[in-house]
Image (cartoon, rainbow, N blue to C red):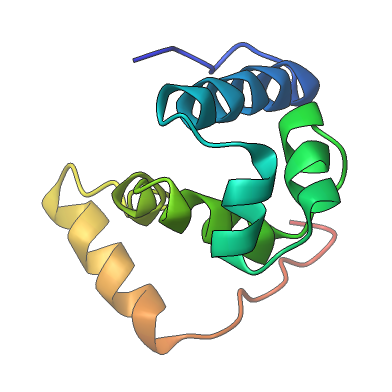
Length: 105
């Protein structure tokens, strides 16, 4: 696993785009193949691989075509390392907004 904790956002995007292209090529698929199966345009796949602005749904569609949905399902899972973490997570599930802290606090 690649540690991205000290990377700039554009570096992370570049690495993920390269991985996406490598995965597509490893599966011997053209951009047109992926686009057709994902229900998106070939330009969208090209833009995604180049790191240009593409909607998140398009990324999910491409991941589904490449059989990488499980990788996306792991994003933003809660980190529950203690009993306090579990309690905080359960409490946050019922609250929809974070209360603003007073400016003088």
